[in-house]
Image (tube, rainbow, N blue to C red):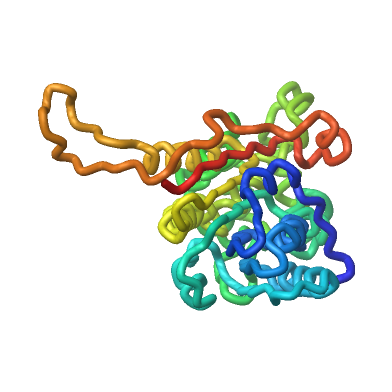
Amino acid sequence: MTAEYRHTPVMLTECMEALQLEDGKIVCDCTLGGAGHSMEIARGISPHGLLIGIDQDDMALSAAQARLAACDLETEPILLKGNFGDLDSLLQQAEVPGIDGVLFDLGISSPQVDFSQRGFSYHGNAPLDMRMDPGTQTITAAEVLNTYSQHDLTRIIQTYGQERWASRIAQFIVQARRKEPLERADQLVELIKQAIPASARRSGGHPARRTFQALRIEVNQEMEVLKKGLDAAVRWLNPGGRIAVLSYHSLEDSIVKDAFKRFSQGCTCPPDIPVCTCGNVPVLKLVTRKPQAPSTEEVESNPRARSARLRVAQKL
């Protein structure tokens, strides 16, 4: 599978500029994927810098290892299997005192969608899996669909998928599973098409896109993992170090925005209090006040970059 793992890095130039790469820096790519971003990071910090790459997908780690080996780097990268929600323990494992840059690319890799057996795609009759790390994760999308209550399904699809027809889709799911378990992507897609009125299906892309996104987020607990990962990354950054985050939907971007705001906020005491009692000290300086979007040229050459948004901050 390694040879088939292809992933075009999104906003590559913008990410590299944001990280301010220099020889000797220690930079962590928390979402290694096929090493599209990491190869450029490694070149930018060579020959004395150290790249740390993290991914929970065995296929991605194998592909990244092969591609980075071909770069003939003087300092061998440290590649670790894990979830960036466990960034504290992973960086302890790497035995580094701190990091000078950290990158999060929150988008699902193209190969994970394209390899139907992973269950992320709403095309075909793939099993409803959606686990980023099948070796350690237990719950699958099929289990969510077949065991969660109608109320919880509605909440997940509405919150994580921002789907206006969430309650109706959940109702159809519960009715269908009484007859037979939902186990394949095509079963779910057909249900969603039945639940969404024909007039609403004519715009907004594939009708199953939002529901599949919501299930993937629930299966992998992506929102909680992101919050933990951001907090840990800021703790590990050396003074002057940069954190760059690529998000692909408003939920992710909102979490990143709120985290950056929280870390960049100073005293929150009322103005009439003469002495600060809250003790808040800003930890980050915002580099991007508003998220940066990909260029028109990039979107034309890589449509999957269309929804990408980049936020950057610097450790004080």
